[in-house]
Amino acid sequence: MGAGAWGTALAQVLAADGTPVRLWARDPALVATIAAERRNPVYLPTAALSEAIRPTADLDDLAEAEMVLVVTPAQAMRGVLRQLPQAGMPLILCSKGIEAGTMKLLHAVAAEEHPGSPIAVLSGPTFAHEVAAGLPTAVTLAAADRDVAGPLARRIKRPSLRPYVSTDVAGAEIGGAVKNVLAIACGVVEGAGLGQNARAAVIARGFAEMTRFGLARGARAETLAGLSGLGDLVLTCSSTSSRNYSLGVGLGRGEPATALLADRRTVAEGAFTAPVLHDAAAAAGVDMPVAEAVCRLLGGANVGAVIEALLSRPLREEGI
Ligand SMILES: NC(=O)C1=CN([C@@H]2O[C@H](COP(=O)(O)OP(=O)(O)OC[C@H]3O[C@@H](n4cnc5c(N)ncnc54)[C@H](O)[C@@H]3O)[C@@H](O)[C@H]2O)C=CC1
Ligand SMILES: O=C(CO)COP(=O)(O)O
Image (cartoon, rainbow, N blue to C red):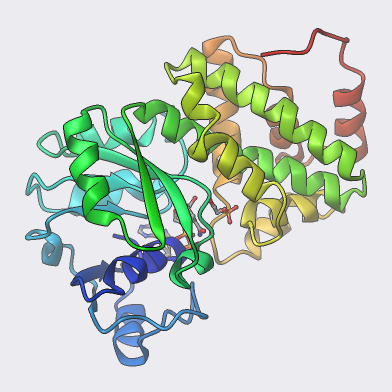
């Protein structure tokens, strides 16, 4: 469900061995193009798509599915889930974010919209173009019930896709949501020319923020230090393949956030997560200075002033 870069890549890795996969896109014109060209020229132009992928613009076509992978932008998830037939099939949430307004993690959103469906979360260091190309990738597959996560993991594993099972759903989600905001911060470091020492500092202190917030919201530290937390943080904080990192590079160069966001066709989730995270951290009484700095930059604050404010914070002991 969702034919952006990530939904298309997941469809491809699952269908590469001939497993039939329906790929839902909301845009019928994109569905027609994917069916005709066996490519998604808008969101994943480099990947040749398997004949086993059947694109559709009709959510009713998913009613008979063995499972549904939900891969819309995080803020669109509730609306699209509301239109999906209530067929009780497992839902695997692959998007990364926190719902604006409610501050809910996406598994809670899905459970509200589909109370009859088992819910799982798939998250980790996974650039879509690499997954579609069959390059080796490991992910966290989390569900509250191990008897849900285990069979799903066995069903989606492929020679190049290795799921690790977890029962820490909140931890798997928080890592993916928070790292997008921290990836913007690392992009800012590059764009502002602050050097590699500074980037490593942002990754390490950002991880401390992720851990503080995660623990406050019921996550386990070992999950945050795993694929869906630290693993994904390292990936997206060090590559311009990350849309979030690239957005940060622009901000660091002093380009206005409004113009950078208006220019994007693809989603940089961190820009939507940052203000929600700011509110959620305040509600949980958690200090998140790096995420807060990203929020200020997205709101139009001056780069130099934001960096100065971060560096002049009172000294503290290292640790979470
Ligand atoms: N691209 C990647 O490498 C990865 C992305 N993700 C996550 O997957 C989610 C989707 O990301 P991508 O596929 O990369 O996005 P994308 O930017 O490539 O495509 C977004 C897709 O969502 C659709 N869309 C936009 N608004 C919508 C709405 N209101 N209702 C339904 N569909 C809507 C667009 O038409 C498009 O098909 C995000 O939460 C992202 O953080 C997770 C892992 C890897
Ligand atoms: O989540 C991702 C890789 O795991 C993709 O990162 P971006 O959304 O920053 O491109």
